[in-house]
Amino acid sequence: MKELTYHRADDAASAVALVAADPDARFLGGGTNLVDHLKLGVTSPTTLVDVSRLPLDEVSELPDGGLRIGTNVRNSDLAAHRAVRRGWPVVARALLAGASGQIRNQATTGGNLLQRTRCVYFQDVTTPCNKREPGTGCSAIGGYGRYNAVLGASEACVTTHPSDLAVALAAVDATVVVLGPDGERRVPMSDFHRLPGDRPEQDTTLAHGELVTAVELPASAAARRSTYRKARDRASYAFALVSVAAGLELDDDGRVSDVRIAWGGVAHKPWRAEVAEAELRGRFVSEEAVRAAAEAELAAAVTDEQTAYKVPMVRNLTALTLTGLAEGATR
Amino acid sequence: MDAEISLTVDGVQRTVTVDTRTTLLDALRERLGVTNPKKGCDHGQCGSCTVLLDGRRHLTCLSLAVANDGAEVTTAGGLRGSGGGLHPVQQAFLDQDGYQCGYCTPGQVCSAVGVLDEIEQGHVSHVSDDLEADPELTDDEIRERMSGNLCRCGAYVGILGAVKQAAAAGSGSGSGGGAA
Image 1 (cartoon, chains in turn green, purple):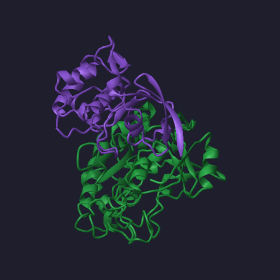
Image 2 (cartoon, chains in turn brown, green):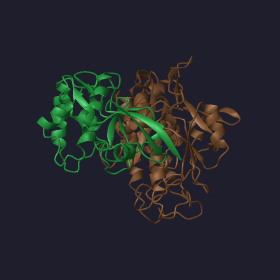
Image 3 (tube, one colour):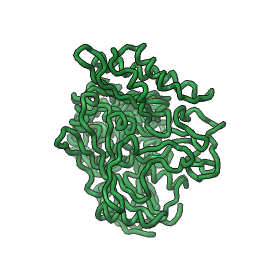
Image 4 (tube, chains in turn green, blue):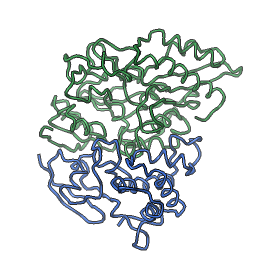
């Protein structure tokens, strides 16, 4: 590990100024991912600006019924929050499906969105990886590829985003509030993470020095009737093979008036399944209808023998999730 | 870069100068001689370094010491029962044989205290059916909530029994026992 200069930020604006002025500086939040990467040599900043004590740790209700979540709200506190459990169960369920009790006590809202991929090659500094060292190549192509993406990948990078929370936020159309050197801007969740293209080192659309200060959740009927399901190798404390965040609103006849579907474990960003959503609007929810809608979305999937399982897995998990929501299941 | 930090460890105020790259776990073990939290994986995967940090269960291997300046750390060795003897969670691990080699035990004990406190505060979990209700401490709830603590000896049956016994004794950190 390189020598490390540590600053504890006094306020958000000075933290932004410090990091923006120094390409080798990084923000430190809960540290659950960054501290590990410092030890592994995945990243080698020379300066850390600790934002974890900034007073951005409130959950507050917005005038329109939405919720504003300060970036330093810990994952455990957000999942336990009564308003989240009632109005956005998909968010609580996604948080509770991730990591362990200890890590959720440490991990922050903004930090969760900014965690890096768990691709084994990204974390192994002895192997080529375009995300870690641009231009060195991708070891996951033709290597151990069971966790690789099936949608939106590129020749430079085939990895997936590991966050559960981000998938839920994509489904409920959350907005990320960002502070930069030139002031605040608001980024729709769908524009926050990016596909790898030829710049896989760039996970998000944030510029260096921009700080996530809050996440806002709009209220909706589909968010109230929502849930998150995750398929993984063990029952707890494992990253997703695939996951589904879904919300549903039915009209008086029982037809779909609003549906939200986002997938985790399939792409470099949370994958909002808009094709599937369009297929389902105005229809009755049935296992067959949801499977057909998911298959329309998955027509663009590119798989190999290691990732082929993900297509039927995410299709079936989507059907299970939406038929459950239609029947009034609480999880 | 060096930084002077102060920590309250098991009720005792300690001041130490650390390199800013030092984890909280290494500061406790290597600089302060507090070897109760164990280094297992050192990557946040095993839970053996778990302590109560400002009252909540926390991994010390994924925390920089300098970022935790001023924190109150309670290790499994600093827990006490209300009468000054063993904490009910410590007693329950003994009674239920919740270990074999014992290496993961301090982390398991701290995590169990955290679990019972979280239950008392009404925190739901991945296996809770109803997010709007207060959770009940079923076996599945305990297994899910303790999943961040691995035991390579496989003493999970005893660990489950210990958490159940401690819960029955009403021994979350908020009642029945406390930190030294």
